[in-house]
Structure formats: C-alpha cells, structure tokens
Length: 306
Image (cartoon, rainbow, N blue to C red):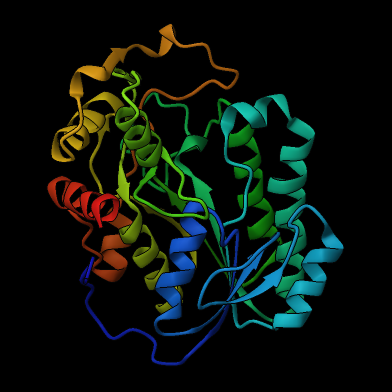
C-alpha cells in the first residue's frame, strides 16, 4: 500500500544499506521498507529478522561497530539504534551516553572511514516545548538527559561526516519492532486488558504513522538529501485526544482512558509540553505527503486487527 506520494524520480541504483537498531520500532519498519528496493543488512544485538540478512552489532561497543561495518561494507547507514526510554536514560546516564553518544561517534567514524553516507535519527524531544511547530531553524533546548544525548549525537554526526543527513522524527505510532513496542502498542494492550490508561491532555505531539516515517527516511536516502530535516505529519494532537480517537476506531473502552496533566505524573525525565514539528522543509524537498489523521488511525487499526 502506498503511504506517500513524492514528485521526481527516486534513485534507481540498488544500495547496500546497514540499518542499526533493526529490532526496534522504527529500525524494524525501516529495514522492511528499504528491503523492497535495496540490499538491506539489519544490525541486531541478538537474534534475527525473518527474510532480511542480519549482522550482530552492539552499538555500545566500538569494536563491535567496526567489525560489523567492515563485514557489511555498506553504501549507506541508517542509524536507528538508541536508548529511547527517557526515564531510563535519566536514571542510567552512563549507559545512555555509551549508546546514544559514544555509539553514534563510533558508527559515524566507521561509516566515514568506509565511505558510506549516514542518516542519523534524532528526536522531537530536543526542543523545550515552549513554542511548538518547530522548524529546522529553531534552536534546540533539551529538557532531559535523553534529549541532550540525541542532540549531541546530531553534532557528532555533523562534525565527523561529510556525507550525512539528520532526521528528527516526531513520535511514531504503529506496530513495529521485535517484539512490537511504542505508544500505540502500549495503549491497545492496556485497554484490551481492561486496565486504565492515563494520558496527558496538556502535552501535544505530532503523531507520525510508522509506515510514513519509514517512507520518509527512504526518500531522504534515495534523494541523497543532506543536512537537517524534520519528519512529521505536520499537525499535532494532545496525547489524550489521539488516544481517544484510536480507542474509538478499534472498538476499545474509552472510559478506561483518563485525562491527566503533565504535572500530575511522576517522571524522572522532564518532557516538553509541545514539541510538534513542521514538515515544510521535507515536503518542499521531496513532495512527501504524510497520511492524514483518519488514514493514520485506519493504518494502525489494520495492523492490530490483521
């Protein structure tokens, strides 16, 4: 199913692409999406991915990174591997830094040494949430250790590599990963179990369909885009509003969803109240057309009921 339309011809050359974090929510979907047209090698810590060539890599171990890159010799690297749970990053700062900062440095150095270009996945959480609808020209101001490490990874990538792109992704929603994970998975599993879900009514995010996110990364790669781009649907909803719409579409009990304020929740990591992203630069460069909210919900529904 086509999830986007874009003007202009995509690059026809088959690339050899190393995708890190390929067992994660975004990395798994990216690997699947790119494997339709390219030779994809999925980097995983353990196990494998059905139908896709895999290589063992521990992003926190520089020697493991070098061995994997030398083995694959990719034309391009899509760096999705990261420690992403903001609260766990806050309480486990050393490990978070090893993965998100030192791991990114090692991968950027090895990619540059081997002549591969790299797309580094960053986060909407690099902003403080005071403005919303952030563009690439807005100045980041991280509120959490996780966001600080992702921003440092951006700077390392730009300083280390000549051929790179940085993709700041909005929060992704959809079924992806081994096992499946993410906000939508948590919400559906919670409601199906008859448990209450407390969702922020005063936090606004750009809820980006996972399939669209993978497609946007594919466009960035195939169009040889360089520099910084925001990947989002170009709209925003509160976490509570999005959860209510999703629950209704899936026939789940919306009375189990409780609206709360961010100040009502105990969190180790501070979150921004509005880190929504503008996608105008990506649209101008590629003609990318993300799914509308109703289409996003339909796609998620098909994933959970298929």
